[in-house]
Length: 166
Image (cartoon, rainbow, N blue to C red):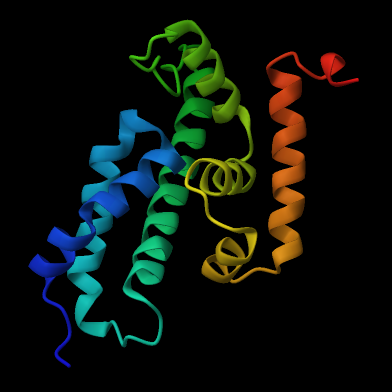
């Protein structure tokens, strides 16, 4: 079987990659980061050996691209704070019916550490199992469960629901 061409990968998997990137980084950066993912795919497609599913390979590239973006943004915000300039909001409000609640949730999600946010969004929103996420990240499944536990607890705290959970 011939390896897929870049055009085939792009056409068949753009929606998947965009969805993963949007869940991990937020919609504000999703288009640019999705294009970054496909730049990496274009450079590395010839080296894809097919030992894993193509979506697994694409997910790993998206994970790395978004992670690099998150680290760059953290450094940029830190530098802006050092020089007395207010950083831009991490995630703009989403155009949903309840824009206030959506913005509050987006801020709370953005405050979660990157591994916790990724685990929470991919498992709760995308419907991935902890086992699948562990396989794709090459970490023990209990690591995913721990990330989910801490993410849920921290999110409840950030949304002011910690005392209501009794």
